[in-house]
Image (cartoon, rainbow, N blue to C red; front, side, top):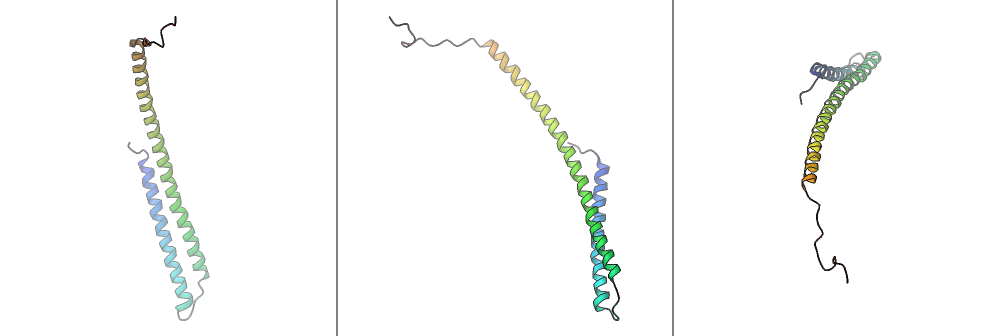
Length: 123
């Protein structure tokens, strides 16, 4: 089946890309903060940069997760439409089988029990 909401899928991909870029930027900021704190001459205070990098890292994870959530909702919608389609097909097949069974039942004559010595009257 063809997917609906293609534009929403594109937005989800963009959100996931922005989330990954934010995470990469946060890791780079943490590396710069670590360099400024421990290796730079003279050492510099980097607490604000570290706090900002952690904030961006958490925000990037949230943005990426929101893009994934949009994709989950799109998959739920697609699976719901597929299930409805297959249930309609199953209903049609069952109706055809039911009609064929009823037609066969009307054409078939009741079965006679075979005559054997056990079914004959005693006497």
